[in-house]
Length: 323
Image (cartoon, rainbow, N blue to C red; front, top):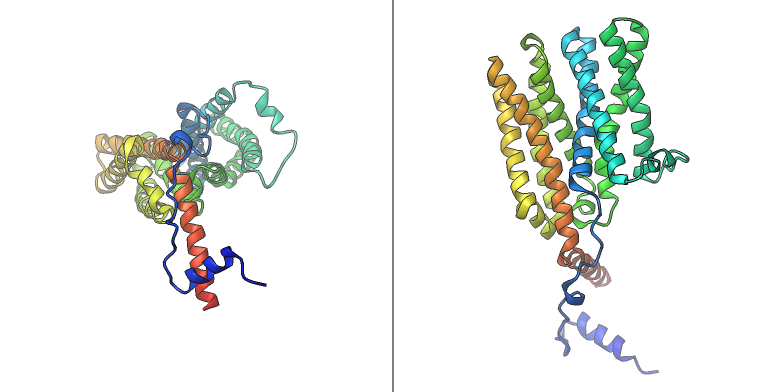
């Protein structure tokens, strides 16, 4: 039996011979996107990302402040976290369109779904945060206050990072391609925001832990951003250009300035300015990453070209293993 034309072409390709038919260039149908961009409203969902991160990381810092006797900072951060999670829940429900959709997500728990797990985290975290605030403000039921503060602190990191897992679980190239570092980037951004809130609302004598956390968060955020851009390859262009690029450049400048300003000065006006800069930088990070995701979904190149590169890489590896 004689080999088929396809087999003959494959053998010639393996021997390094030039193919007679040039490789086809990609072009989508009338330049339309290959995937549908998320219909999420930027103000609601990017705001939900930011506020949820602020709430979760704030509860963790509040627990640390509570344990070290920094009661004024602890109480202020507990109130801030409760307000943030309330606003983030309102933003999520507003984006859902129909309020009854949120409780409907709690009818089942699906461990493989970040949205299902996140809904349960939010539903358990919010009452714990509310109880910790009530006990801290009234000064009553200290044991319940300690238990609720601990519960909110344990759930805080999950609340701050699950939105990164949720975004990476989609087909959006700028999010899915960075599925490994994206939750760490969200965690660093949330810590920067919570540190900024602590600098803003806490007394100067209790600000030392927040200053250290702000510096660590700024360093971690820059490292996670570089890791995400490395993993994304050509898709990282969406992090550097357009609206996303502008927001992420502002994020870097504000976060670094806030961390440095908070670390080097104990003057109250500069401390307040540093706190505001850290909060604004974290917000710019969330809105910038959201904008990068939408831009990558709307341009078909960012969907098809990386897929083709992965296929070609796998084929080259297979040929090398065969040889």
